[in-house]
Image (spheres, helix red, strand yellow):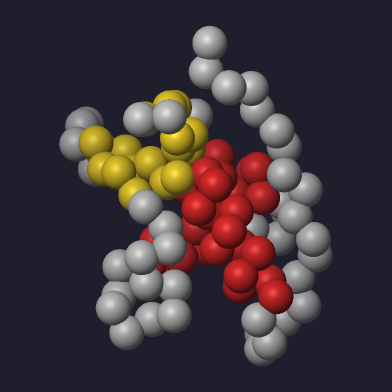
Length: 94
């Protein structure tokens, strides 16, 4: 996890771990892809920050927005039933 401009960011795997067993890294990446599509209801709801590097680099997703998107998708009708997320609290930057 990293802090950028006062917001906590994590990789897709870190976000998936925070949000619970029924969330995968692929699901977080799918939310980010949908958030970039102006025709999708999730448009603009998940900020991502890509850092070029070895291989493909690293993409960081904003944790609070990911939790909001998870809640939004969990509460909408359609698809399989989801379990309630168990958010693991982390400390503020020191």
